[in-house]
Image 1: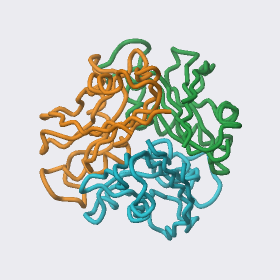
Image 2 (image 1 turned 135 degrees about the vertical axis):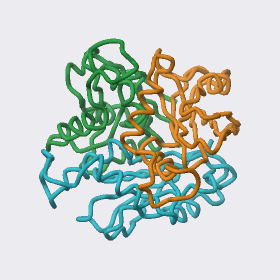
Image 3 (image 1 turned 60 degrees about the vertical axis):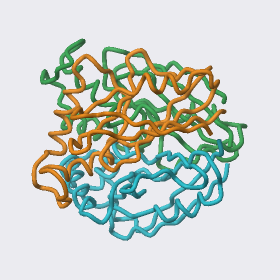
Amino acid sequence: MDTTELRVETGDRLVTDLTGAALDFCRDRGDGLLNVFVPHATAGVALMETGSGSEGDLADALDRMLPPDDRYGHRHGSRGHGRDHVLPAFVSPSVTVPVVNGAPQLGTWQSLVLVDSNVDNRSRHVRLSFVAG
Amino acid sequence: MDTTELRVETGDRLVTDLTGAALDFCRDRGDGLLNVFVPHATAGVALMETGSGSEGDLADALDRMLPPDDRYGHRHGSRGHGRDHVLPAFVSPSVTVPVVNGAPQLGTWQSLVLVDSNVDNRSRHVRLSFVAG
Amino acid sequence: MDTTELRVETGDRLVTDLTGAALDFCRDRGDGLLNVFVPHATAGVALMETGSGSEGDLADALDRMLPPDDRYGHRHGSRGHGRDHVLPAFVSPSVTVPVVNGAPQLGTWQSLVLVDSNVDNRSRHVRLSFVAG
């Protein structure tokens, strides 16, 4: 298995595009599975269209599902941070993408993104791993 | 890695059963991991019971979480289509199933399904990939 | 592929920690992917912090998203059981974790947990599978 850990600057963005890094990592690797894994308890990874408004739509959906208020039992960090710890149960920190001839088989409108609602941490790690088939 | 892309007719169904196709694909392959991947930005894959009402229950849950109205920033396509682009953040387009002796290790009540709330597209692609262990 | 099925006593807990079992299973295996799979239609697996209140926060979030009442078409079992059948569409029963030198690459605050809202079943099976890379 080839594996590497990237450092990703997320700033205060909910959604950070990782597609370019994933394409670079898979190039020249042949066929296999790409696993994208976030070793954090307040972030997930997703495949979604970017640049057409869905980032804000996802933020709104998360605010409805997991309001950033003081209802949470988990009370470390900023107000509402408790909801960041529930997010990974719904937006998994692991996604696996098939790779054919060095190319992740993403659809035309799919981007690989980090979803990180935790504004207290402005940089994150992401592990990319490739298992040849 | 053995990999193939299926064309699936979804019509206007939210849930389309892929279990038979997955069983056929894995037969005679021995042990390994089956990855099921949908290369679309408005669909996911899930494992759930079918035929006992849960398809409608999932539709209702999605309507509560992601109401099909005009609140979305992503405004292409039919009214409410913006919500289809948020769905894959919660219902991932990728799932991996262990295979033993050519048989996906699904539980008795688990079916593999495509979840596609986008009624504007009536057929979809699904990629099945097998990595031997 | 090395694979084994564990029996896990869940009692009436929503969240049951599987981290120790996963660490034990991967030890001495080198590099590869660990797949954690629950062969049940009313449970999922997740990576989250435990012991700081997030278990209850997840329970509350699920009660908001999927109220345990009689609205469901799937009506077998206890009142509200229909919602247990929708849960796996959002909390997937499969998660894949990269393993390096026999160690799952979990972050400091990540635990691997079974999420099982079905109080009618007090024990569950979990399949652990390792594919070397």
